[in-house]
Image (cartoon, rainbow, N blue to C red):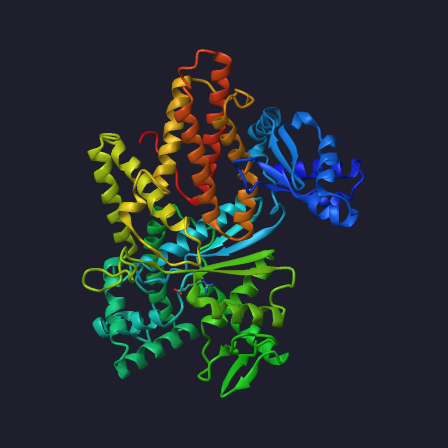
Length: 582
Ligand code: ARG
């Protein structure tokens, strides 16, 4: 469906032409004086310069050419503005079309295109901590938004599963259980099917080992183990398999809890096989050059405002690094999926890394010119006091703990306010907690830092997830009391509140489009906050179920129904859902 602004702009352009002026002056914008009008066109002011006459004269001539039935009000005002209010009939038609077309008639710019969304970024053998909240929920929202807008979407968690952390675990395990067959290089039999550790043990082994990094002997062992693992040492590969199995199952459980689902569970290790050929090729074509024993890809460009150092491809000791893996992962993605876009969601402290990798990908032709590359670098989530989040003993807070703190907080409210009882408590609690957590995060512009404030995020009033849920629940209950509503057509607005709500509904398409174009789930949040506000206002001011005129009542209900459906689609894009009662 065309956007309202485009429709009325076209009509305005035609009116300019019919009045004898150029069409280009007919651009309509949303009014910046909502007290006076809904939309406005300032084209007569610029046209006056070209046609050398008074702007008001042009405005008047244009107004006389507009079709009166489209507008409740259309007037030319001094010095030459054209102010518009849409007619009820126009809005009714537009919303009825939205109601009956799939996905509210939204245009699908992604149709036929594939996007890879690289998000999550968990590291195996390390528990998810609060730093993993943002990449998970922003990435999931961006992926769902792209899918809704027609893209074929591939979400890839891009596990950190190949680096020093594995070597550290191997080294630590060897110190604890040297008798295990994995460490016996002469062993040729089959390794045990059961892992030599549980997830709880693994989560203790890793930090212990990591704490010993400053011990040179231990550190050397860990590096050596990493190298041998990557070179294919059988016993180490077997340990790695165990680590992967135990850890990935646990990570999946945690992401499931957040309603975050990846299409692909690939990792740095999956890029490894692509590295040798890629490195050779880059060396041969002179794209990689030698520098102090290492191989690097110079990526500085003319006009750079800050220094962009070369991307290190191979370190002087022959090992590959984070950037090498990301470049090789691009080789794999282009080969397997040939995406039109790759979107990376990480902490903004990785801005430079992605700048270097993207430039190297372009320079080498690893990524074809038409494929868009974008890095969404997000800011830090701080504590309520604006300081970095820490546990009481100064450690890093686990994501699980953060989620369960929020859940406990919400559960207490649910129980105290007797929102639901018995077996429904957990499900309702979980849905509200998810909304609080995700909306609290997503309503901020991704690049900005924000403070995590449990009380504020979980409040049922204000710009919060629970407020949006509450609005949906309230509408659902009106609809349920009314009965069968799905077939009811949209009617002309019966009062000013209905009209405001209808105008908010028409902004769905434009809001989704700008949210997608600027990779900004916060714009979806801002939209539903406005829509929920208009819905609540309408509900307050209009006795919906008490209305005696059945025809009128059916119109109110149809409007509530459409509002609810749009709100529900939007929260699904943000990754949460509404309970039945609140
Ligand atoms: N595992 C990485 C980290 O902990 C994040 C991975 C992000 N994705 C990527 N393609 N580099 O920082």
